[in-house]
Length: 305
Image (cartoon, rainbow, N blue to C red; front, side):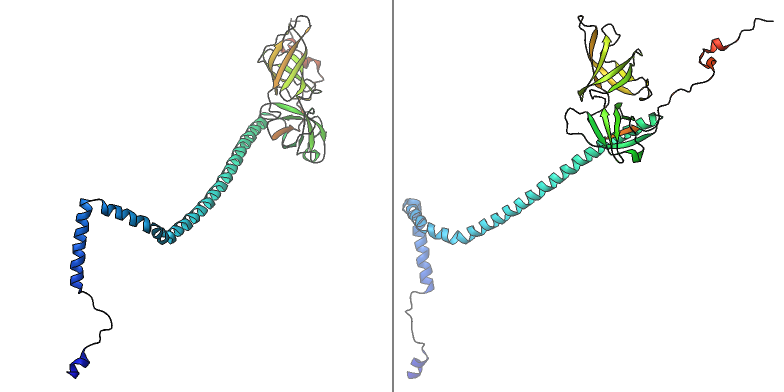
């Protein structure tokens, strides 16, 4: 008896129902709750009360996950802002490159047109870039980046791919000043391309306006007539486009008509121009007076001897 008692473990804790008994009890309780839930609203009300009671605990348990989501969202927003800034910088850089390519394409097209104009003229030319214009708004002058070191001299004509721009008036070693044809004190001998009528065109002091002064109201001139250099005076080569008649005002109380023209050349639009540094070709003067007579007059007749 003593030996059996010594091998029995001491009971330090109170032993409850067996596991099988507890499982049977909870199964019966579950069945009862399901039947009660289907028969009445008591269980639903109890569930709502329990849900309200444990809601703070649920929020407290979900708090770490909520903080993690907010941190992830902040990091994502920060990366998105950085990406947007990077894309904005790339966009601005691309737009700058696009505008620069557009300017280069326009400048290249203008240079090709100038090259074509230089090939059409027999006079030697120099390509010059417009550096700046004077601050005086009433002065129709420009400054070129070529001077006496490049063969530029006062009196030389400046053109672009469309026509006459002006004339060199002051020359320095590396720069020169050009007076535009729109200057009020500048005059160019021209002739009407349609009928060959010769006259003089003057600047009106505006970038887009020229004037034909002292022409009678009976002069054969029309709106749209092209005015080109006549070559008289030996300064401007003949045939260079200068302007086009834009508006004619007839006033019978005056002897002269008011004729407004617009320049053909881009006097205020381009950055490169051509300076005609060669001399204007003039006809050779012969010492033989018979050389000026018509061919039929120079033929001698034989009446016989």
